[in-house]
Structures are given as C-alpha cells and as structure tokens.
Image (cartoon, rainbow over all chains, first blue to last red; front, top):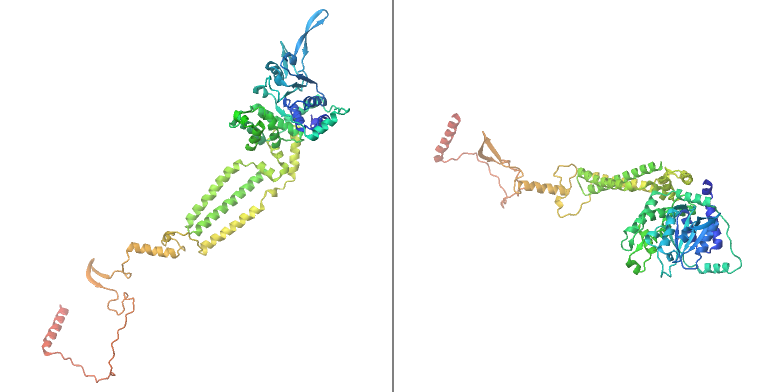
Length: 314
Length: 263
C-alpha cells in the first residue's frame, strides 16, 4: 500500500489522461465518478441523452480493468433480469438448476434510465447496491469487489416513469448533473468521432490497486474543526424551514467527509481542506434535500439553497 | 513548545494591557481631582473586567489557528496533524514529516509583536507622566458643573489638595455653622467669682486709646486754631480757689474715705 500511496499522484494523472483520449471535457464529472469509486459507493447521473454517459463509464471500466455491464431499464424489466435467475440444464440425462448470473454481477454496472424500471425492479438493484450481495431463492451470492453502480435519469420524458423515492435516492453518494459541452468541446467531439481514427485506452490500474486506493481514501486525516464544519452543513439542511421541507440524513455527513477525503487524495494532498468539503457539498446534498413547494414555485434549485447554506455556516 | 510560548506571550500582553487601562483610568480620575484612595479603587475595576473578558475570550482561542495565520504554509496541515496525533498510518506519517520540516524554519521571535510592545511601554510612560504632573504640579482639569463649590470635599482634611474652590467652600461651611453676625474677637470678657458671673463687662482694650475693635483708623478732628498768634502768659501759681461753702463738703469726703480705709 505504501507503493500505491507514493504513486497515487501518477496513477490519477494517468487515469484522467487516458479518459481524456476518449471523453472530451467533462473533467468535473469524471472526477466525481472516480471519487465515487474511491469511496466504494454509487452515483446517480442526471443528463440529457447523447452526452456520453455510457462511453464515459465503460472507458473508466476499461482503464481500471474492471468488468462492465449495462442494464437498459424499461417498464417491463424484471428483477431477475438484474440479479439473475435459475435455468434448467441437462447433465448426463438429469436436469439440474443452474444459477445464471445477471448483469449485476459486474464491477461496474450502468443502470440506464433507472426511473423507467418498475419499483420492484428498482428495489432489486438498490438492494444489491446496499448489501453488496444478491439473494436468489435460498442462495446468497456475494458480489465481486469493487462494486459500483452508475444509475442514470433523463430529466425530460418523465411521463410514465417511476421516480426513485427519496429513501432510495439517499443510497447514492452523488447526484451528478451533466451539462451540454461548450462550443470548443463539441467541435473536438465532432472531429474525433467523424473520422476513421477511433481512440483507444490502455489499462492503467488493476483491481488490487483500486482496492488499495479505496483503503487509502479512508486513511486521509481530517482536522476536527473541518469535520464539525461538514456536519454543521448537513445539519443546516434540517434547520432551513424557509426553503427545505426535508433535510439530509446522517448518511450525507458520512458521504460528505468520505468524498472530501477522496478529493484530497486525488488532489495530491495528505489532509482534507475546507474547499474539498464545500466542493463536495453540491453532489452530496442536491438529491437528499426536498424543497418546499413555495421554493419550487419560485424557481429556486437545490444548488442555490446549498450555496446559501455554505455561505451561512461558519 | 510553541503553544507554551504563545500562552506566555498572551499572558504578558494581557498584563501590559491591564496596566495601561489602570493607568489611564487613574490618570482620568486624578485629573478630575478625585481622592487618591477612591481613584485607586475605581481605577482597578476596569482592568479586572478586562481580565475576565480576556480570560473568557482566550478559552475559545485556538493556538494552532494563530500559528497557521502567522505561517500560511502550515494552513490546515498543522491542525490536521495535531488532531490526529494519536493515529498512525503512512499518510499521517508523511504529513507529520512535512509539518515538522516547516516548523523547524519557524522563529519564535516572529510571534513577538514589537510594535505592540513598544506602544504599550510608551503609553505607560505617558500616563505615568500625566499622573505625576497631576499629583505634584497640581495640574487639574475640572469638569464643568453647576455645583462648583461642591466638587471637592476636602474640609481641610487632606493635605496639599486645597485649591481656590476648597477655600471658598470651607469658609461658606464655617459661616453656615456659626452664623454671619459674630465678633471675630470673641465675646466680651466676663468676670466670674465663684462660678457666678459678675455683671461687669470690661471690653478688651478698655482704657487704652487703641482698641482692637477699632480696626479703622480714627479720623483726627482738629480744632481750628485761632486767628491770632498764640501768646504766652506768665503762669500764675496755682491756688485752689474752692469756694468757702464747698470746703465742708470736701472735708467730709476725705473723712469718709479715711474711715473706709480703716474699716
């Protein structure tokens, strides 16, 4: 682990350089995805179609030598389509049941448009996210480490969907908002993907190195006053009666501090800075606070409320 | 070590400030002509309040933050190391090494605020001079008030504090006590025989041409001299020209006197 710690700066630089070969821009998004991986947690990505979500996460899986699977959620998707099911096989004249593993048995799982799947199917995935295991019948199957789920939502086309309930949203560490690229970025995208040359990526780290990095993340020290500041931010979401109907749970406090530690490690620092906490507050809190009707009517967003809280809390 | 040093410096600064506050209030009270004892007593109260407030404030002050403010290169590193001093891992070990290296470059003298130190010394000297001049040179600044005579309250009891106001006040008080109509030379002497006053009053200065009561010089009255020059006459021998009818009366008178002397 000492070697991994000494080389951590080079490792992250290599990861980002490799991803940039395929993905244009989106540096903050990629950084947040890597942070989610380091925290051994999951992320919810909200973006319009065609912004390279699948390409981004599949590239990340290839760089880290991790198995990748994609689940396209539809209203008729069944839980067994996610977890796996028993199939009947014939061996030497006798028929036996064999468990056929589902797409959830991968290191990185992309659940596309999770809000289109039925609540029953959603819960099957969410259960595996929480427990890191799958129970089928009487058998329990432990999922391979690391296990990372990137669920996506389409902010348009909400008709006929099953929005994730707040209790389930809380299981995601981050809610990452993906915006359209800038003109220069789109120009570069067009240049790359309208030519005959298809960029390829190389493997940068292996599974064991990633697991070591996950352990290192938790060992990053944090000062007591910065820790208290992070907790105060989360608690402030419960006290703001003017804009917030329901505030964030203690899971948000854990996530915020963990994400700040991962951010410090990626930045090459041996300590958590208050800027790390402030930067991570947005993806950590935006899906965990429910605004009042009046605030929504006025067009106030979660990010605006979080910004106000960060300015108020000392 | 740094924490101890900072605590000592803070204590020193607080003491200096307390002395300055005491001297300031004492100087103000002396300048408005307050009694020395009361001036000391009242001047001690503000420094005590200041000490209490500083004590309460210093309980919340984080020494580590003070060091980090002085040395930005240690920002957040020092307090992270300090808060995790009991934990051990490779990251903390590396962080400790970095912090120790930077702290070796720290000079203790950088925490000593020379400007503040000299300004406090100067203030003390200035206030001491003001107090000395107020005490020995009798330099006073009076607060304007309607009851001018009531500002000071000496009654001749304190030494060296008598000013114009004190004299007038003293005189007024004395006059109020004994009334305005009295003879400063005292009551006329009264003779007493065996505790009983004899109805005999002899005023001091009786019989002398000059009386103490007569403070004003008498106007000399001059008789007009005659128009004609004074002539001298030959003096006649003196003969008592008592009429014959009065001779008996004079004779009896002396006989009475003689009989009284014998008796």
